[in-house]
Image (cartoon, rainbow, N blue to C red; front, top):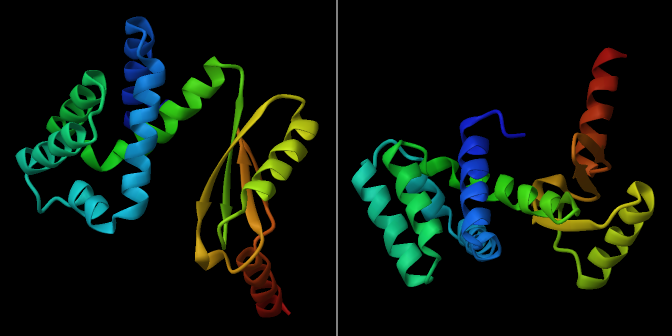
Amino acid sequence: MTADAAGRYATALFELAKSEGAADAVEADLSAFRAMLDESVELVGVLASPLYSVEAKSGVLAALANKAEFNTLTANAFGVAASNGRAGQLGTVARVYAALAAADRGVVTADVQTAAALTKKQVEALAASLKSAFGREIEVRTEVRPELMGGLIVKVGSRMFDSSLRTKLDGMKTAMKEA
């Protein structure tokens, strides 16, 4: 999980935040940042685009961190990532950081993708099912992906369970081509 650049940034940030006693604050900041990315296609575009300079990306990230009152470690990490040309990977850094923090707490993280938003009751039921299957506490993180059309994709560690309608239709399409 941490072999790529985003993983290295997340690991370094987690270790530094933990040593400074700010791991929870940084995790909250990164969670809020992921929510910002989910809500703003423009922000994702600016951070990922080579059309914007390092200075422009650094300025956007600094303004965001200031406005959201992020921890100094979070703001500094954003600046380092941007200056090294990694601003577009900050969403992945946030995701890996959350997984590292959850593992540190002894909690397994399940990334769940669904076609429509799950209710709180559905998330709780899913967490309970996963807890009985894996025998550990499960933290469920959801993401809405309408292109799945129905069903869900659950990823826990290196295991993935895909019951999405999109995958089933693609499988049928492949089977029909082979016939």
